[in-house]
Length: 403
Ligand SMILES: [Zn+2]
Image 1 (cartoon, rainbow, N blue to C red):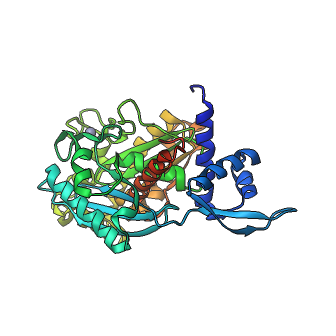
Image 2 (spheres, rainbow, N blue to C red):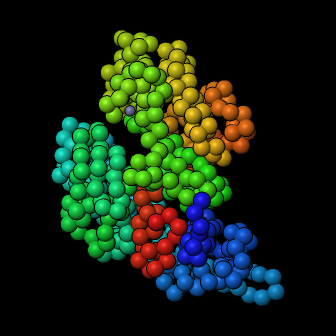
Image 3 (tube, helix red, strand yellow):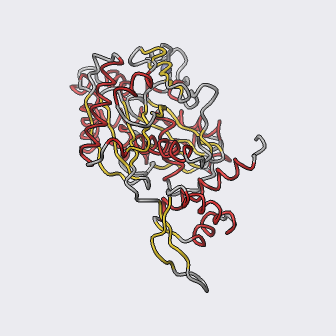
């Protein structure tokens, strides 16, 4: 690990105080010092900066040993954050308060046969303004906006480097989006894997300084990684593409152009391919992805043997992939999320408990817990709202450590 500068340490203290305030709602300086294990002097300094910037305010008096003390909370001034999740078939925008309370959201369908940047941008603009209208928020009240784009994206330049599903290469998305959105703040673009990891770092109840992996299971699959409490981006923001690690040598073709990737077996189209192998004439083989997963859930509910076999094969593949993650990173938590996982988690979790132990080294297995990520309704929009909050903090000269 590199040497941490004084400003790194200050940023980490700020993150710890804000995270604790978000989790507890209100707290005195003494409460914050106890919960974060920071010194009372450090907490007092951090709180003073946040009070000056108007990001934290006093909400009353708290009980304290010996003397009265102010109760603090994240500011409820009318500034709002926007988090956007662009997926293959929809764009969802959600409006959050500065304390990351989810206020309203709006989704726009995206036409998966027309993936021109112009069409996707129109969908995002409609989703954002629809959500603002639903929340009764004027566009001038938006203090920050984060937008998640599938594939490889560079937050520093706002360029979508490569989105395989849309065949996008080097699209200057931020430059095209900002004038269309008509907001007074710049857009933070990032990848959904980075968003879900940041959501877990800020909002999950576990320790904030640990090594964890957030596994996203949907149409595509991937992993967000945090080591010692810090988001891992890799050299070109492409870390975590676990879905494109090889599960089967010379296996099924994958949409990345290679063969045998984890995603080709565990992603929803991969599950459809497995069902086609198990039961080529099964009516669910030809369903659209959402309807397919609903049919799998209904089949599992009814103990349908074909769907049970599909679940077994999918979970076996997933267990091999997760075993590799455990052996490679030695995390203390693996948190699962994603729309496919949400729909099938009742059946997936017991299978994983059974199957992962055979795929991982015992010492690493002893320290890891594998559980669902529980940070509210959409960890991608929440994570992108957190990036927007980071932008607000940075504009006040108060960056947290994740920027
Ligand atoms: Zn692949």
